[in-house]
Length: 134
Image (cartoon, rainbow, N blue to C red):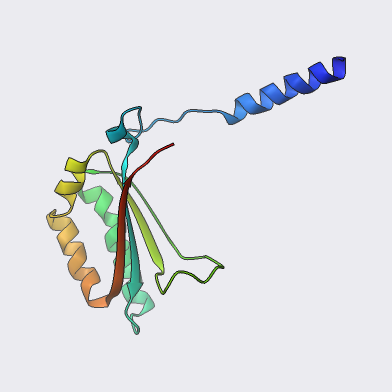
């Protein structure tokens, strides 16, 4: 009996340590502040050099410092072992607080300038937007 109580107590302590709530300026209880995710994936044209790709990565990574409407940003390159990426190598995840922020971002001059850097090297792009849910 004592052993069962001890297991229960240890389990409760472990579980309580796993449950935490993090809030950022992008996250709260309302739909808008959970974050509107803007997923962008690139497939580069054959012959695009590693240096050109690095310049594109650097230009995209600079956008959060230039565009106030971006409240969070992350990116990475494909490491999937399933071989289903269809040539897409880069994924960027931009988070906005609202649809209005996304609407302001799309025509933003800094975003447009990034498009000029990317355009000559882009074979395909895939964009998917969604409201984050938990």
